[in-house]
Image 1 (cartoon, rainbow, N blue to C red):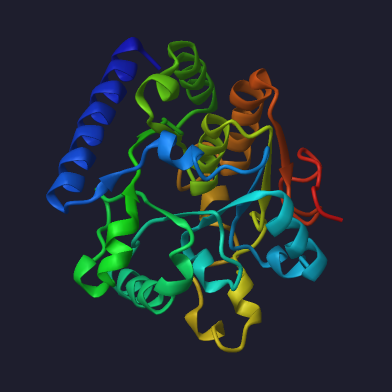
Image 2 (cartoon, rainbow, N blue to C red; image 1 turned 135 degrees about the vertical axis):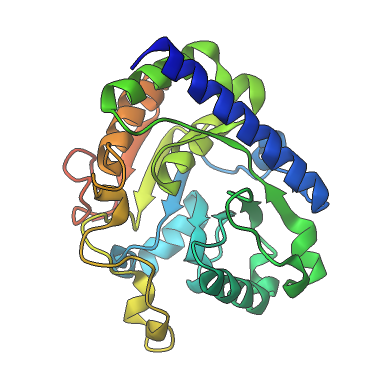
Amino acid sequence: MTLRDDISWMRTEGRRVRRVARLRRAHGLAAFRLEEARMRKTSDTLIVLGSGRSVCRLDDTDWQRIGRETDTLGLNFWMLHPFTPTFYQFEAGPTPERTRQFETFLAERAARMRASMMIYKDIERHQLDLSRLPPETVKTLRVLNKVNLPVDDEARLARTLRLCRAAGLTRRTGLLLFARASIVQALTFGAEMGYRRIVLAGVDLNDTRYFWDEDPALSWFGNAQPGQVHRTMDPGVAGVPVDRVVMLFRDLWLQPEGIELFCGHATSALHPRLPAYFG
């Protein structure tokens, strides 16, 4: 890749960041601020709650430990699970039908999710119909702005990560980094929040089954992942599979800060490269 490619990427992301800010203001929503999020931090350990089927392996003792000893970040359709996370990061889409269903779920669970910090991402791609949500939920939404890193080539991604770290991009701007999947953005969230351990629970990546598939009341919902290969692991979608992105973030972003990274269970595609946090 050339310097021209890098300059083009920076300009594109600069325009996108400004567009997100304009959309947020047009909708009358508050911005996500790390300072506000840090006021909710109670632990040195953050458990990122993905929707993979291995979540069903966690027993009552595990959930008691999680609720007592750690902070948690639920992703996307995590609100379908009965455990209420400390932070909840979500996006609308990828289809209008999926967005409408998400709005319905969010309205139905508004009272319970009031305890979570509601972090709304990718507003420039898919937008919620705020009129379908309770006013008190709309008031709690915090719009996240981010920088999308190039994932067409692993060497370029590594170089861009080093550049962002050397420039102190996230620290100076409050922007988080995204590359291929929400879990990667969750890693930069955890790092900027000052956690010393980050656990990727329910981040299986080796099939397309979700925890709600095991619930007879929700199994009708299905998922937006066609086929047997998770889209974030498919090199045909983007050049660098998400497991390689995670490893690069561990090596170039987390380890230099002394932050430990774990997967949830040994059934994850990230194991044994990442140690399992739960038995």
